[in-house]
Image 1 (cartoon, one colour):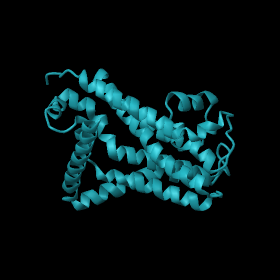
Image 2 (cartoon, rainbow, N blue to C red):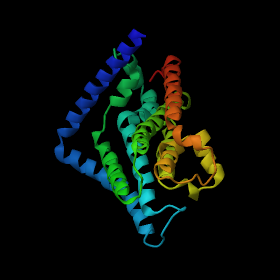
Image 3 (cartoon, rainbow, N blue to C red):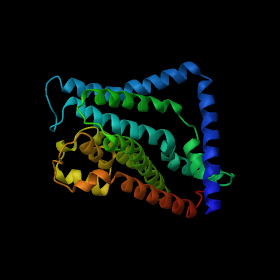
Image 4 (spheres, helix red, strand yellow):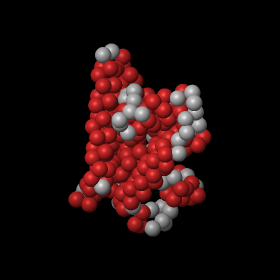
Length: 274
């Protein structure tokens, strides 16, 4: 157990060093770095601008007002942004397998997962986090919430567990590429696609879709169920009330499955001989 903890600590230190190196590389071209970061912020912000324009013609969407939808949008954007910043590079696994560069990672004295996450670390992705945090902060200023310790704790838990859920999906999608060779677009359907679906209240989807987002690909736990508790909204689908508090368990199970899948994939990996 002590050896495993020491190995994890070593990989985290290696990730920090490698990611810092790529940040310094990016900062060497300051204008490009700033432009790319601002571009990321603006591009992701267009989504919410479209929602604001839509509310020029309607008062509510799926029973939720603009402030409540801003809360859902900001929460999922921050969670996806944190996971994308930390482990988003693992989706390049298929390309590295084809080129044979993944083989080189396996002979280095650092865990391959840490190397994959830190390789070409793109700090400009912080633009997505900043844009989501801005929308979330605005929504919190306009929605009427009876804040107390329980709701404040749920807000913090929502961001941490939501990021962990997306992290697990990123890793599971990358691991699938050990089998498929390259299926990054399939993985993106669950990560970026899940983010797009949870930007809106799930009441706009059929019940079957909501159950799939709850029990099959559990992105509903990123923001929907915590939001029902924070905003004090009854569940329109009549699902069990304990689902509102299940996000930590879902995140733990998903990350555990992702870790086991990644470890199994690496152990059974056979070089392509490229």
